[in-house]
Image 1 (tube, rainbow, N blue to C red):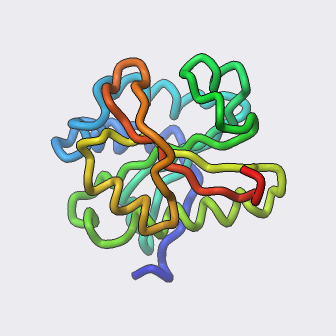
Image 2 (cartoon, rainbow, N blue to C red):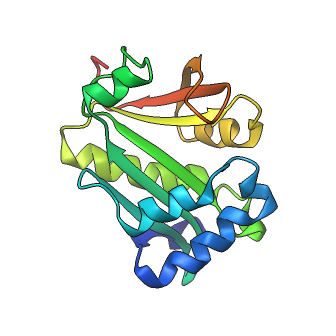
Length: 168
């Protein structure tokens, strides 16, 4: 299964599938405003991108990422994160694939792509302190909890990071 995993370009025809996933109970618990994610997916910032996570020809999840400026990091009190780090958000929407190791594998594919760019010091994810499944998946991909913080609208969260730079 893992050899068939790929990150495939997101297209406008994928919006309804993403909307379906964002409102599925196992995802909706962690995404309080699905329309914000739809807007982002349909019009990502110039420093961001997104993809479907596919296994074979089947779309099973969604991943998005963006380079983060010093100004944005400071606005959420993440002063220790280097500018140019990449923030990632991911979900496994197809319930049949939850708990199958797809999330960690997708993260490692993205980390490999970001490493090849050569200018990304750190990759970070935010997850609720209550989302133990996500924490385990991210740790399995090599992410570690850096600290707890409270991003607006999400409550208590862990910032989990993966360093691509020995100095980060």
